[in-house]
Image (tube, one colour):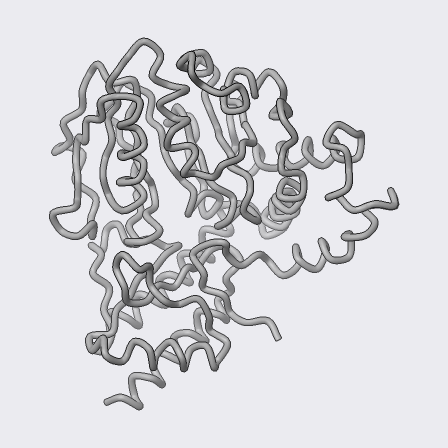
Length: 359
């Protein structure tokens, strides 16, 4: 029996995608082999990666003057690769600190440049996004970095910073493909795959072409954006099976009606869970209303002595991976694209039952 998987990542995949991958495991389209066994330079896999990239560009309406790179190392590796590829002749970069993933980005970037933290919400335990009129950007910065959805704290940007002339760089790992995005407002967008794209092992990087030639001399070739762009992300062997699954997810999203349609489903799921939490005196969510994430919803029991009992009961009902991140504790329900409204309703029903049996 399939459970309702609320994991923050690696996360649930759409069931139709898993079923199709199972059907094609031993023999992809009559070629007599699995995708995992193909040469990454052969005609069969070339057709897979080309379609996946075309569908990805279609879903996000990516302008022609942006390159899409398929790299490895996850978003954590990108924390180093961003300054490596964007500093050029500069030595300063601006960062906004809105949570644990922002902090990791800042810590890694400090190995390569001076980091100017232009705003932070740490004063209120990362439960809000500082208003842009409070930011203090450096006009000499090489770029401005933000994390547009903090998976741990459950904080999401629903606006794009406008008060900077430097390239805007966004870590969108945990909400990419959950709603439409105006790519043209960003210099670089990057995202690990294991939330809304597919299995772990691949990182999508969307980079404006005029930013391709700013890399530091120490940048490894396989992580040098210009070199990977010239090699069509084939400078080294890419994670072929992860790309194949991502391509199936893109096809599934297109069949759902694209990102505008999936956004409406995500809004409905998030609103249902938040509404129940807010109406309860038993549970609470501390995040400011204007920036509550649709993808990652942390919540807490007011009596934390009941946490283990809550998680045990949830597991027994097939509601898994609800334990909050160790940094903040409590609970967390991740409602990525593959999570159904039925899963959310099952969670709400359980939360209601648990509350009634404790009061």
